[in-house]
Length: 475
Ligand SMILES: Cc1cc2nc3c(=O)[nH]c(=O)nc-3n(C[C@H](O)[C@H](O)[C@H](O)COP(=O)(O)OP(=O)(O)OC[C@H]3O[C@@H](n4cnc5c(N)ncnc54)[C@H](O)[C@@H]3O)c2cc1C
Image 1 (cartoon, helix red, strand yellow):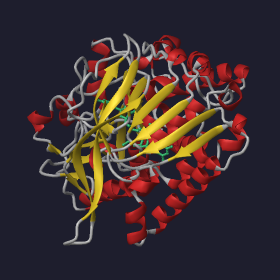
Image 2: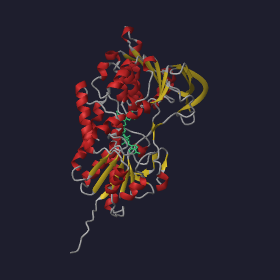
Image 3: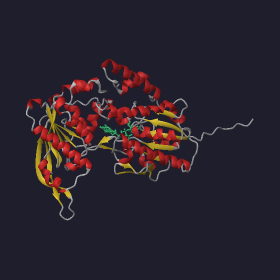
Image 4: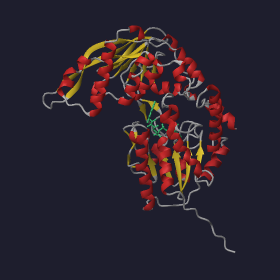
């Protein structure tokens, strides 16, 4: 009898990362072609969902509803179309698997591993003092990412705090640090240990400081309004911004819709504060500062600062082209503060072995056209690693459509030069030989069930487990 070898024509796809961009892309692919892929997702943490779990603020639960959509992946578990490898980093310092393993065993690779480090201002002195922290670490800490649990922040001693950078992350931080009362936070997914620390903090004022002008503010009006509206209910007041710096510019130009709304909101609440008769209502304050380039800090003691020093910028109208431009001056100014948060964004990094595969990494992203990596066959990218740490979850959704379309186009044109690869068989073998503690999707479901039942006792949606607790629980 002649033996017929079964050849699977399914494309074996390895996905690095399990954030929104990865999930949206694979769900698009499976919706379009449910029988054409075998997908393995590799996530360095035991738990999935990237910044939705360790970035989005705990008091914004509605943003995390996208997880309901990601959980649709369960439909593809039983027939082996999808497999999750949690606690399985790719091409990091101590990882068992690297890109060589993936290129050898998969037809297609999707890079969706997001940002891995903070983007810090250059030319800034004393970065290593305990009185300075980057927003990347702080956000991971308040979201109970185990890798940041040893951050010992002297919150009880801080009264006046500055944040450099004025994006939505700075607004999130301001909201959480000022509105740190138990009633506001206790029903969120913020962990008990963080809650204990946060509620003891007694920060009275936050300065949000930016290098450029008011029209270049990075926060959205939605986040701004939420913070402004905390005045009467929570006693958290916006004290204002340096209006005089912008009067001429604002009189001179026609504002777009977003800026018009932004300025009108800021002016309304600034006036409201100035006209407030009963000052006893003010529990805490925050303000916006513009046109200040940070250059260093003055230190008070081992834990705290006394001030942050800036070079002042000036807004000048260029008479040749009528544009308003920001020019640096030599004037130094200082803002008193006990503590400083550098919230100047997140940054991407190439994986350790990118050079071996000629993967082009430039300008903080993998170079690509519609998610297809330039010059490297069968390789795609999506989300923050493909667009330079920018955008919200909705942008990831749009991005994922471009990337999944590119994959499907290539598949339809057979651009992928199909050859059968071993996929997960060989990968699992290597992981097991190296005693890896892989977290499967079913493990994750069990872990999250425990998180939910622990949370229920505390009146919360769930109480996050530590990475080690997760691994111990399912092993
Ligand atoms: C502090 C903060 C708050 C935010 N709040 C909001 C909000 O309220 N609303 C909103 O719409 N958007 C918000 N965003 C933006 C949103 O989180 C991003 O748009 C989105 O998460 C980007 O998705 P991603 O899949 O590209 O990356 P990520 O979500 O970062 O996912 C990448 C995943 O890859 C994993 N990974 C990294 N390296 C490796 C490796 N070597 N091997 C295996 N896995 C790896 C990571 O652990 C992570 O799970 C926020 C962002 C931040 C930083």
